[in-house]
Image (cartoon, helix red, strand yellow):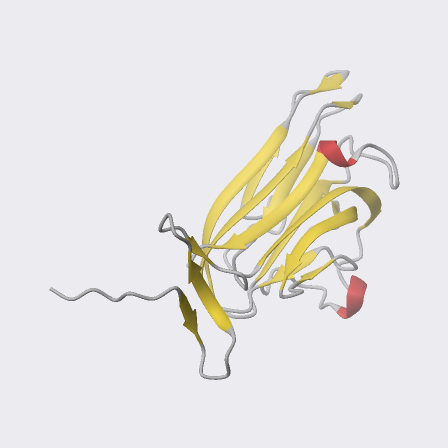
Length: 183
């Protein structure tokens, strides 16, 4: 049996791809990922940010609203476009995609969905969650493991025909969208 004893794994151009610390943890400094939070603005126009009207070849329902976020906390590789609310996969592989909407006053249902694959429904996306028709909406959250190809996009939306946040309102803690490349 052989042992490979290294601290860093580098590309031939000198870029460090992985670091192994003294505890054996493997760190990836350039792994594609993003996290955005807070309500900033909303639109039903899926062509925002010079994007196509389709997401992965799906033409979204006119009732779905894309949100732009108040704060993009992390965007390794700059593959998330806050103008369009879309993350574009730079490499093929497995991604963990999450979104959530916290407590919100409302007078109707609330629906949270995510477009992630070419087989998604135009109305409810890849996965979808909705809350009861009540004056108080508790937390809605979505989590998906998606095997994606290069150029595939992830886009979170809320149903516009249900109760939804107003543009520019709310606190960053109540609304988030993120994705991380797993491998």
